[in-house]
Amino acid sequence: MKHSRVMVVDDDPETLALLREVVAKEGYQVETAEDAVSLARLHWELGGCGVLVARTPETSIDVDDLIDEALDQAERQGIGGQAVTPFVLSRLHERSDGRTLEANKELAAANAGLAAELAVAAS
Image 1: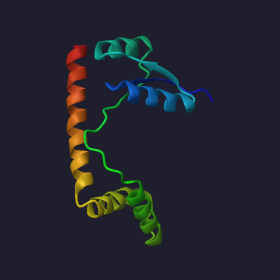
Image 2 (image 1 turned 30 degrees about the vertical axis):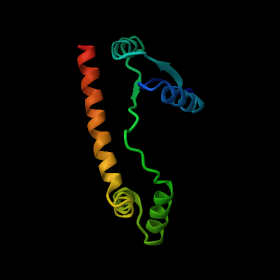
Image 3 (image 1 turned 30 degrees about the horizontal axis):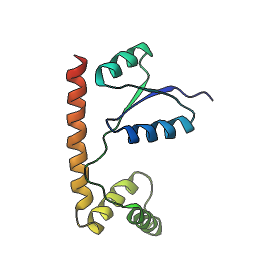
Image 4 (image 1 turned 45 degrees about the horizontal axis):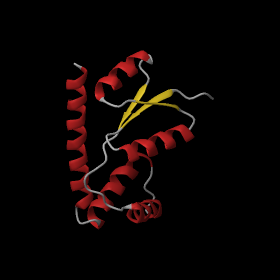
């Protein structure tokens, strides 16, 4: 099965290179853009391909072990389907003393700012 083209954009060159490598390994044709205006133009030239815009979070928390623990706990308690995500997020919040919620709020605000920057640059 042939995958679509994907545009990957990040303001950090190392993150951009990593994203490009990971997405390409999944079989996607990867396009990159240096800035927001190039992003918009290339997006339209490619006929509206998918666009992945990533912002590296300022606050980083290693939660891999906490996620594994929460998923194991969910399975033991018979929690499945759509209930898994809220369960895991709740456990992450509890076990990180609220740090995951704060990190997610910061990331959401940063992504909103990035979206605004892209919108202004493309207008």
